[in-house]
Image (cartoon, rainbow, N blue to C red):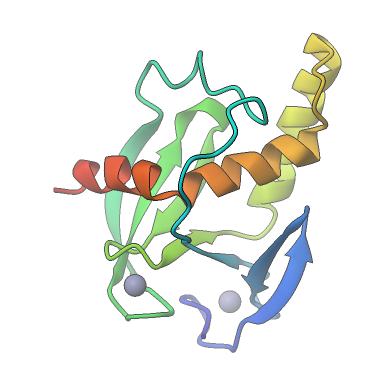
Length: 145
Ligand SMILES: [Zn+2]
Ligand SMILES: [Zn+2]
């Protein structure tokens, strides 16, 4: 698979506990969507933030899905102010260089403030697993209709 930005082959890389396809040129990363069923709720408590609108600013882009070449759609995950793009056919998500590290820093700060039981890195991995689940993806797709 190739990077949607620079057409360079993506390299499988483990970043913060999850394997992603990383672009050696722009350092962006591709997260393949998975058919995940239910996730253990105790791993990541979505209770509070799941109530409001989690996803805002949905806009189409000129970037192409590495799997099907469809135009990726950009959105913002409000709770962590995380910018991502997704394939409208559900192949996965594109994150820019260091977007994951920036969000992890936010989570680390929160971890110190709230004395969270879970480490920021575990929560980040859980968040991404959640975003790759079918139910979350279906919710997202409604935004682009
Ligand atoms: Zn690239
Ligand atoms: Zn696609």
